[in-house]
Image (tube, rainbow, N blue to C red; front, side, top):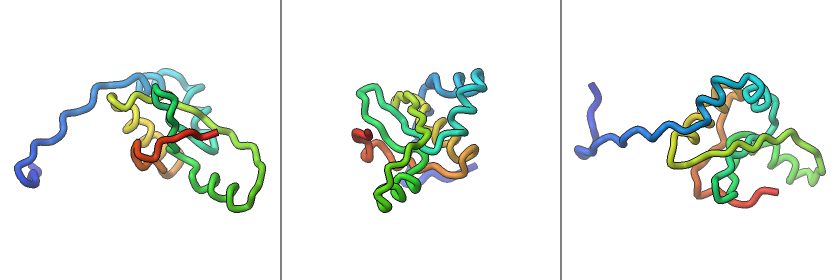
Length: 109
């Protein structure tokens, strides 16, 4: 049993999105994400946020290098568990997750 702080109720679970079933069903999708050097989550409004690869992007900017990267763009719906699923995938398959919340969402060229 766990204790709740300030008698707060736990957040209800998010509705299931389509990302988890896609990752389970589609080995090609998993392989593309594993091979990506940068993984971006793309919201329905087109806003993009980094889930993996922030370090390599910072290195490129610092070195002013015009490198081409393997970038995967993954559609996510924030009202579902898609963000949690993509974070878990990045942590388990890439070793880390750079997602910091939707406040860091913006245009990424």
